[in-house]
Every structure is written in C-alpha cells, then in structure tokens.
Amino acid sequence: MLSAALEAADAGGAVRRALAREGGRLVAAGEAFDLDALRHVWVTGGGKAAAAMAAAVEEVLGDRLGGGVVAVKYGHVVPTRRVRVLEAGHPHPDAAGVAAGEAVIRLAQQAGAGDLVLVLLSGGGSALLTAPAPGVTLEDKRAVTDLLLRAGAPIGELNAVRKHLSRLKGGWLARHLAPARSVTLALSDVLGNPLDVIASGPTVPDPTTFADALEVLSRRGVLERAPSRARAYLEDGRAGRHPETPKPGDPVFALARAAVIADLRQAVEAAARQARELGYLTSVLSVAVEGEAREAGRAFGRLLRAVREGRAPPGDREGRRWACTEGRPVCLLQGGETTVTVRGPGRGGRNQEFALGAALELDGLPGVLVLAAGTDGTDGPTDAAGAVADGTTLARARARGLDPLAALERNDAYPFFEALGDLVVTGPTLTNVNDLMVGLVERPTLTIEKHDRYPGGQ
Image 1 (cartoon, rainbow, N blue to C red):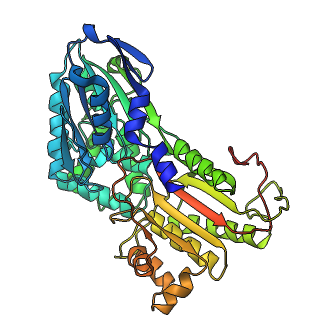
Image 2: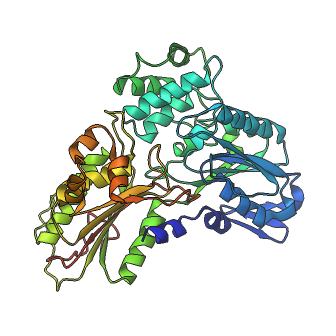
Image 3: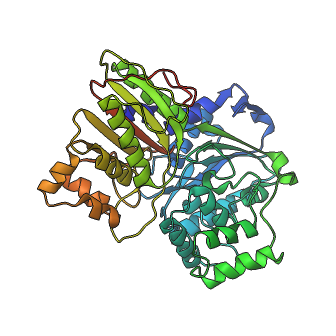
C-alpha cells in the first residue's frame, strides 16, 4: 500500500502529466506557450523532489531547455544534463543552502522579457533555498527554525516566519523573475495545498505579515529566545522600515502562474485501491490529520481496537454505528502531517511517535497492525520513513528492557523501534506529499459503511 502511494506521488510522473511539448507548443499546467516566440526556457526551484522534477522537464523539453539550477536535500540528487543540482541541508538550513538561494536569485535576475522560467517546488524547499534578509545571518535563521520546530509549530506558522526573514520566500522570487514569465509546478506537502505555504510560496502572493510572524513566535513561547537580529528585523518590518512581502494585486503576479501537480489525496487513494485489490474492506478516514503525533496515534489505535472488538468507533458524534459483517479484513487509511513538541533529547520523528502512540492502545490485541510513514522517506532527523506497530509491540519491547512511555517522554522512538526491527526504511523516495497512516484489522466484528463525515469512505 505504501509502494502504491509512492508510485502515485512520483515526482517525475507528476511533471510529465503537467508538462507537454506539442510540436512548437509547450503546455505547462494548462497554459500554452509558443516555443518559437520564447527567447529561453529556464528551470529553477528547490525541494527534496526538485532534481527528479528537473530530470522530467529535461525529458519533455530536450534541447529547447536553456539550463537552470535547483536545490535538493543531501542524498536526493538525480542525474541531469542541463540543470545544475545543488545539495543543501534540511530541515536545518546550512551554508550550502545559502549558496543555492543566491544561485537561484542570480538565475532569476538573468531571465528577462521573452523568457519562460519553470519553477519546480516540493517539500523542503523552504530550508533548501536560504537567502537571509539584510542584516539576518544563517545562524539566526537556523536558530529560529530550530526553536519553532522544537515548539511543535505547524508548517504554516513556521513558513510565516521564514518568509519574513528571506529575500526569496513569500513571493520575492516572483519579483526577482519579472519581467520573465514563470510557471510554478508544485508537489504539495501541506494539508489543503495552499500555494503560499508550499516551500514558503516564493512565486505567489503572501497573505501573512511581519506582525503575523511576530505573533507566531510569541504564541509558541520563543519570541524572547529568538536571535536579537532576527527579532529586530521583524519588529522593524512591522513598523514599516522594511518592505512587506509581495501581496495579492502586485503586478509581478500577472506574469506568474502556479499549480499543484501532486498531493496527498492522490497517494492515499492509490493506497486504498491497492488495499481493495488485496481484499480489504477499505475506508479513507481523512487526508487532513494534524495535532500532536503521539495523541493522533493513540486515537487511531483506539479506533482500530474498537473495530477489532466489535464496538462502535469512538468519536462518531452523529451516533452512527457500523453494520455487522461476515468478518472481512478491514483497512483504515488516513494521511496528514502531525507535529512533535520536543521535550527530550532523543531521536525520532512524528511517524515513529504516531506508531508508538498507537502501540500503547493496541497492547495485547491480536490481528491489528499500524504503519505510519513519511512519503519522502524521512521522518524527523532520522534515516527512517516511520515505523510499524501491532499488539505485540509493547510485549516485545518489555522483553528487551525497553520502556515505551520513557521513550515517548524522551522523544526517543527511533532506537525503540530499531531494537524491535520495526522501523520503515525506504531511503529517499524523491517525492514528498505528507504522511500515510495505515491500519489493518484481521477478522473484525464490524465493517464500514459509507459515512458522510469521511469523503471517499466505502
């Protein structure tokens, strides 16, 4: 099921569906361009999938592509002929990310009237394209990013701050590109597919403000700990001493088009099709799961226990019950992006904490399995995509002297699952459309009927 989801979200395939060369015409995200009328076609952008996307663009355009530059996370390089691929740090920006950001700005400023620039974005683009605002250092941006990540800030809040400490994000790349025309092709790793949040929206209007950025830092309790230079820049911006990010109505956006070409729903629906082919009675519960990872995992575990034991699922506020069945196996699918509030010094990620939270609810229950994995192949700062858990997880852990509650308290799910052999390790998948959670129930007492609250449910 995970493999089916990854295939559906394949970055190269998504680009080839969105981009087509038809004789002397190029069709990009539904808009047609006369190649003979264009001086040059360039490629730029960044994200974990950016190199795979660039390679697909090269396949479509061939020698009509003038060149370009994209930034990817270390280890995510795909061979390209005309597009330069630069590696940089993620999730924490590094000096290589600064160099990549400057290279993108130089290419954008090189493009002129009569040129078309294809901007390729995917998850990770915010960290990989680092161009600090004047007076703000790389170390300042790293510190702010780390504070917000450890405070459990969701991606929208994190990017509202990063946009206002950047010369690329929040629409600034669109301004650098003008007067060239641009088409942005984005793989969405953000729930709801808001283009202004994906990779911090470098080519679309930014609805957030300096005041919003300061409010995020305050609400997450990190404003006073933020580096003084970053805090001063944001405060000066709020006072009108720095220009705001480009807003809706700015004329530069008349030259820019942007489209999401792959997202989480496509991946989850592909997993659901695979589950049905395998004989599971299947329901997609949600593609917008958020919240604290361990708590979301426990909620999923309780739901699976309810199905296994023949009870109505918890949380059905409308009082509907599931109908009796003949014992077909059930697959419950959901997707989203949870967060982790870091409390300890351990290693792990949100999918590993989700799986561990589920394991606490499934302890001793036979015939139930949970998988939680990031579609990018990375879960937090680890080499795992996530983990699997079932009713034997805690018993096997205790037999090895492992304490699941202590592991959660230390945010140390990685060594916990590593000791059990239950990590999911895929390596770089070269795509990124959030996380997939799968629950399998063997011989349940209940089945799932179509439910209005869950679009796509069966």
